[in-house]
Image (cartoon, rainbow, N blue to C red):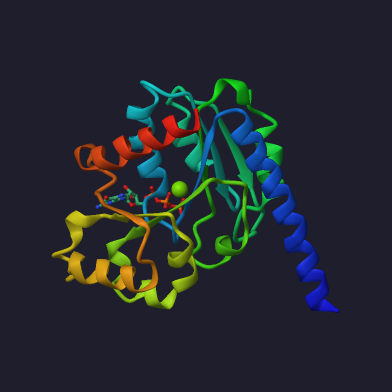
Length: 217
Ligand SMILES: Nc1nc2c(ncn2[C@@H]2O[C@H](COP(=O)(O)OP(=O)(O)OP(=O)(O)O)[C@@H](O)[C@H]2O)c(=O)[nH]1
Ligand SMILES: [Mg+2]
């Protein structure tokens, strides 16, 4: 019986997720779901990416957080609409929450919707939010064994941003070894090596994302 209930929940989530995706696509919007463990650098990446991308594209952000609006407040100084979702302790966003959030935007006036998921390397894997692309931010401070240990989330990612690379020496992490570990579970994802705090390292990612936005418009 319990299995049946869980299955129904997922079917419903996926149906709403598909509806969200249809709305994004119909309006020529690229939607990306940014996932990572807590503190890997999702908000920092968003801050420093939108400061460039908003010169050319119309962007909105959906911020997922358990209890606070701290990340949305960080983005409030940028000239983009932001909606905060508090999951009240829930470890991931779901499609229904995103559906409510996109109701707050004028979708006809957007090119890119960025969804920052709740910091967690497990639960967000199971919930399609209606995104076109999953972006996994992985901080090298987490070690090179996590791609194998958290394989589901690494496998699903379309893009893997290896972050905080300037700390590799101090953390005794070889970027080559880490990337080999990533490739063992995901041979096809686009990989970028960045320090999200250093804008100059984000150019490759920002150019590539700009091209992807163009494909949807
Ligand atoms: N050294 C270094 N620190 C970074 C880098 N990127 C982010 N940080 C720092 O890491 C900390 C967490 O960054 P956030 O962007 O808040 O991480 P997050 O993934 O949004 O965190 P949650 O939303 O709480 O899960 C902050 O102190 C950032 O300044 C980086 O490239 N290098
Ligand atoms: Mg954040």
